[in-house]
Length: 158
Image (tube, rainbow, N blue to C red; front, side):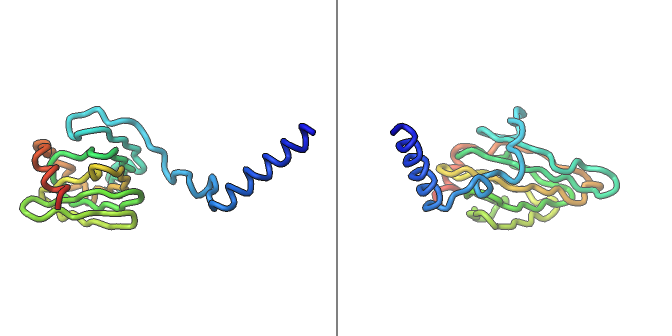
């Protein structure tokens, strides 16, 4: 009798998972979450995995960055520009003097060289993106002041 009950429970669980269409392959992360960032260039909880370290052959640094809700970068710019490929969630991107943009999974942002900007998660959703530092032979990121809570809250309401 116990074997029959166990078999029925096993069938029910398997059927439930199949009905939802969720598999381990579909929910697995493409890249690992990485290490929690502990420097002063971010507000909130942020994780980074470097996928490609900068070198003199490719002049590109590539990292997988995960932001918890409300987490964000400081204002900064990249001397050689930056490309962001949003892979999960929903976030915000803003260039100095411009309106905030909502960025979602599948979105691509091209940050021009020397343009001050910030990016991060929305107040309610996490966001993961691949950050590509381009043309690093002319210089990397230049970190500026934090995005204040007032600036962030105003941006996230738009």
